[in-house]
Amino acid sequence: MQLEQWQTEVRTMVDEWISLDFLTAGDLFVIGCSTSEVVGEHIGTAGSEEVAAMLYDAFKHLQDITGVHLCFQCCEHLNRAVVVTKQLAQERNLTQVSVQPVRHAGGSMAAYAYQHLPEAVVVEALQADAGIDIGETMIGMHLKPVAVPLRLTQRYVGQARTTHARTRPKLIGGPRAVYPVSP
Image (tube, rainbow, N blue to C red; front, top):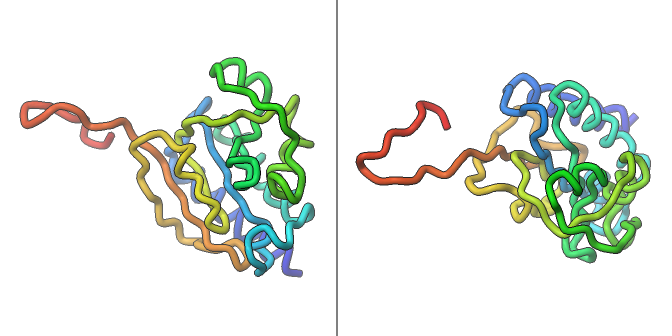
């Protein structure tokens, strides 16, 4: 029963991301996730492949609708490296590293993504256009400057707090600069 509730919560978030219309095809969408936090435990202590699978399906739906590239952040034990497709790594000239995320080194979400993304590889870093942090995993290092926090109506998945952000181009210039109405 809890898994169904959590699935509804994350699907609500995904649907809100879609309705906000910030995402465009080709954008990088980074996902940091502690499945331990979702189930109500301390980060890194109770990873769940079942929760990871449920979340992966919801984010796959986001990808199918918007055309974003899903990027799954590993935990601190892998220096928060990111699981992506080999094609994306090559297209964006991302620095690939030699590691395979597992539950206790990388986290359940990243490990699941590594097993299910087509030709998954791990890259050292990237600069995403938007993302979601489930369970305070600190995705900020993988967001482009300038990150703009989003306050979605659904703020939790299970027991894990969520934080959402999109990015915008930097505003440069000075008093004479002219900026678009909504960067």
